[in-house]
Length: 453
Image (tube, rainbow, N blue to C red; front, side, top):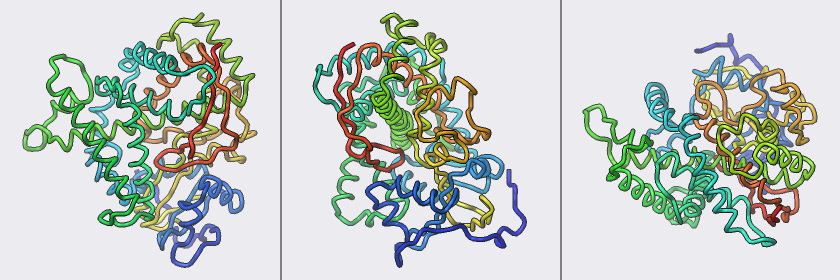
């Protein structure tokens, strides 16, 4: 659907922070020690829509839910995945669901949805809680752990089991660490701050080494599932049954692309969401205690199941509020096809719009006490904002993240298992610094000490 504005070029240009010759605001944004703070300051000082320049490219940052609605819904045909982002991901994933458009995207989404349906993921609840218990058993009372590293490894194992029916014993940490390297590189490459790939810079070498490692793991997953004698309905099995336009089996490169796509999509967001939820609970012991009281009353020490989750209202509120305060995905980028209007300003064709989820979720025009972690806001009024696009941790519109239900169900099961068994004492001093890639991550991890309840 295209909803055009008459002659948007007559509209004014949005405000812009001061930049530098040639590079514009690139150093402030990508090179900043805390790029989230730079964006927050820019929106605070200049309004909900801010213009940046990156090496001559025009980039528009919006924290307006009304703009998000236009980009993702009422005029979504005018906003496509950015060409730079597509090219970066294509080197790793091929024409897969994250970057594909049109009929190809719809076909791939239809192949994926049954594999990550709520009922299918729910059938893996025992595996999710078992993996979480194994992680807890590996922790030593009173010794420091990096919660982000632990969650990355755990969700990698869960992803491999649910999506590929493959046991990732010993691979969870390897997958998560190398994915981090690859996605960090892709983020920087998409905004033009990486050296040409053929140059042997340290960053390029790390990227190539990480990609080789992930490709080798993907090949092992494919080989294992290709020769399996079971009839499990996983993503690889479904993909192996597909044919190309000439009725030939899909190549190993295409299969590998699907493994790489799901390794990111079904893993990274959940890991960061769990990390930030545990971080917030460690800072708000009264909220943690209230949640533990709910878990004790409903579960009485047993492992949670998918059927239990509908009774755990406060757990759901805690996760929703955590995903608002620390949105795992900080932004969604789109390339503008034709001139348009956002927030009353001219948005030219060929520019990039960054829908700033983090900023929308903390926009004081939209949210009461936006910086306060308050799960009760979700129990009192449901969606505590007038605009449905005021809360978009998984995106919005037709391309909303297909794995949303998978991520939320996994998050609830993992948190319910952890919090029944232990309290986590925060060691890292707030505030934390952030590392931007495709998701928002704590730059230096988050250290905590587990204590048995």
